[in-house]
Length: 116
Image (tube, rainbow, N blue to C red; front, side):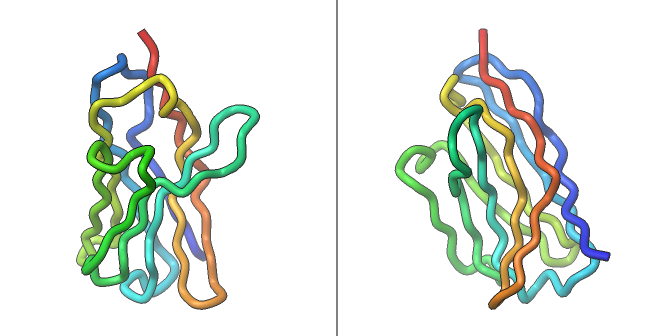
């Protein structure tokens, strides 16, 4: 069955860094664009990074551009999110997402808390 398993969340101080990882299985990973979303308490789910199936392009909203970097390893079926210069407003549950045509899959989420 399809699985997206996130790891790497935790508590970090403002200005710190974290690296999230997502391991995918159960589908043809190289067909899918991969993304990371986040959802803060009381807010809607927000897209924070997307990478094309072959890794040829990436996209970020202004809120994380220059601080977050998405990457993928198609030989390992993994996608990572490197988060630098973290801010308290980055606190959220972060979700891995896969999309191809009408098919979409979600991971279970991993908590990231930025606090001193």
